[in-house]
Every structure is written in C-alpha cells, then in structure tokens.
Length: 378
Image (cartoon, rainbow, N blue to C red):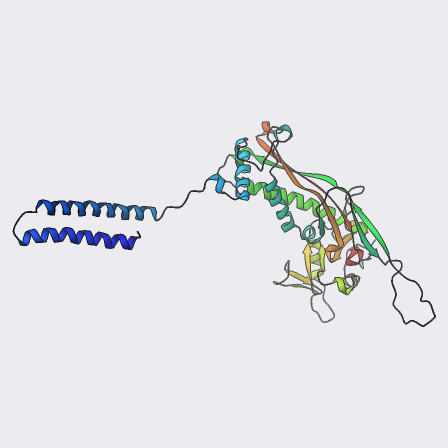
C-alpha cells in the first residue's frame, strides 16, 4: 500500500473506534464485550498502520550503499590503485592490478587514463596518425617526388610518354622511454588529497612533453620525428626576424587539398614576434580569435604554441622554428600502452614513493606533402 492508501485506512479505523465510543455515550452505558473486542482490534490495526507510515517516512531519504562489486570497472580500478598507494597492499578483489618486479604494481586502467590525458595535452600526438601495434610496422605511400602520372591529349597510333610515381614505404619500430614521478608520503597519507589524480596528471605532463619533443625533432638513432622527414621548407628572412612573406611562403608549400586541417606550430617567443607583423594596410597577420582552437589564427589557420619548438634566434640557425601542415602526415607507432609501476622501496629512506611509467613508440613522416617547415636563417 502507498502512503495515500495507508492514510485512508487509518482514517477508516479511527472512525470505527470513534463510532463505538459515541454509541455507548449516547446510550449512557459502558462498552459491551463485543464492542471492546472491535475497538481493541481497530486500535491494534491503527497502530500498525501508523508504524508503517512512520517507517516509510524514515526510509524516504535513504540512499543505497554501493558495495564494491557494484562499482563500475574504472571506479573500482581507481579505488584499488589509491588503496595500494596509501597502504602498499593489494586487495584480493583488485583484478586490474598485479605484482611486478620488486613488488611493483601495474594497473592497466590507470594507464589508459594517462594516455587520454596525454592526447588532451598534446595536439600533435592527438592529431598525428597513430598506430597501436607491436613489432615493426611498414607503411606504404605513393611517391611522386621524382616523377608522376601524367594525363595529356592522345593521338591514335601514337604511344604516349610513360610517366608514373612509385610505391615507397617507411618502417616504424619502437623505442622504450620512461617517466618518473616522486610522491611524498606526507601527501599520500593525506586522505583528502586526490593522490590518483596527482599521479595521472604529473605522469601525463611529463610523458606528453617528452613525446611532443620527439615527435617534432626526434633523436639521432632513436625516434626520427617530423623535422628530418620534412622536404618542403624555407628559411626565415634573418636569424632573428620573420616576415609575413616568410609565413605566406610556408603556407603555400602545402597543396590546397591538404589545407583543411592544417595549422601552425611554434614557440611562444616566435608567436610574440609574429604578433607585431602587419600587412600593407596596417592589419596584424596574427589575430586573437575566441573561436580558434588555441585562441589565435594566422593567415586563417590556428596557431599552437609548444615550448618544445626552437625559438627564432641566431643560436638556433638551421633549425625549424615554425611547422605547418596537416599533422596526419606524421605516423606514430605506439608499440604498447603505457605501463605503470609503483616502487615503494627505492627511496623509502627519503619518505618518497616512486611511480614510473614506460612507453614504447616511434614516429616518422608518412606523407611529406602534408607538412612544411620554416628554418632559422643560417
């Protein structure tokens, strides 16, 4: 019965009780045995109805307590990881975690969160063509740099000149890198501190900064990166000066059919210099744009600033200071998802817990037509 039905039932029982008493009073007598029995039965039932209604009122604000098994997998993984960071113990229900070397713990779900954060932090890693595979990856591409297919008028009984491109390929392997985050045990012991969020953010920031640098310039004998594969490039007007013509020339290197998703990448110092450039009508080339992806547009395209890009200055002569293009021209192979290990003993005497993340990747230009660069004048 619902609350309304119980209220009506209670009123009916009270009317029965009141009627029995009123009848006896009107006849100036005491209740008969039969009336006493009916009154007592109605009173008992009325008390039961009242008790039921009070119980309904009390439970109306109750919220179900979620037991651990009812948590979704991601929430459970975070809870288990937090418990391990704070206590050093893995609960039997922590199926997303396992013992590694030296008592380390590898929680896969936390690693996925870090990857999502890296993608959020680094547009270059997000926009590049990513391949999540193991082993060596060979990517074929159509190369028309030396020759290309031609279409021309034909004459009967006359063979056309033969021109064609060719298939080439790039091979991506994998290079292992690690990022280390030290966490004070004082922070870990602070129950109000979001220790899991701290680990995810710090690890993602460290890895994203390193990945972005490698994707831009690479390292000799390791990850190749974008710069060594760029075939469309020019130099700035001077080693400490960049002009509007330099930027227009850079943009025009990328064919129109690859312009739709193209944008500029540069250092903040270079952006500062470009902000002062005006066209012949006194209009600034670089503009504040609230609708732009990163708040600025240059020659109609978004501008992303990265501290990993070399500044426009003499010390960086011969190095790329501005990149432009559709970043899917860069292929990134992630050999394995980020693995996280927690090391509790390495710096125990320093009252510190170490969290180390490992990632294996490689990157090379897969379509040079989509990318262009501007070097600091030698």
